[in-house]
Image (cartoon, rainbow, N blue to C red; front, side, top):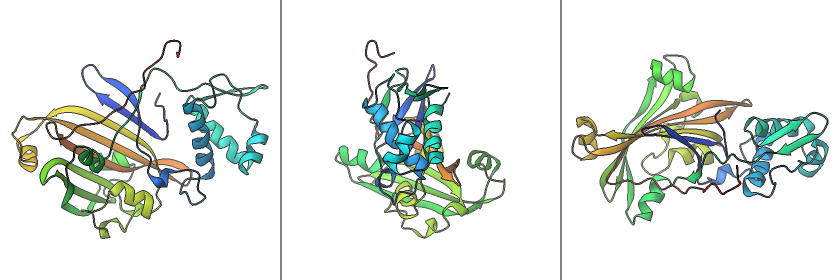
Length: 281
């Protein structure tokens, strides 16, 4: 079952395959406490409770406050509170018992939590200057693959943005992003060499990003990829396939499909794992 902590899930493919949960550095727009948040009320309440569970403030086995108590504490309707509880129960963080109440299960110890830094953050951590070059940006008809990933009809207009990410002027990442045109029609008018697309969608256009499926695979550069990245064909690299989801009319829907090739000798993925302690399972 796919579990969603703070909205994000990652699979790292190697041989044999394995999986882990991801914690992505929080964007200001993902702060669920302000009233101006683009997220619906039930999701903001679920996030507050999720943080309390993951931090240990609400311990496994503890009984959650009643729906009536949560309604009063957070000034929300009973329907909103029930949606939040249902979401956390679906994630495996809460257990509802008929006639007894709702109890905390807590995160599974099977999957280590870790964090990933953004491209700019990682380059600055390495004391390198990040920059971006836009190779192509426009609207195209959705191919069968894009239509399937984004859940749009084949041939529907989608925005396609192809960029090269550089460190100290050296190409290190080649990426392609696609999203439905009607999700953010004004995106192509932005300065895409200077701004994070993910941050633009969240901060400027108020599009909540609530889940991410992030697949990483070992890879060797093809001739065309090597030419773009100014490297040798066959050089080690890693391929990233990332599908980000948003909330539309209360439903979680695919929003942005990103594919990227990273030079293995010039870009490092920074991960922080949470060890599984004895007795935690």
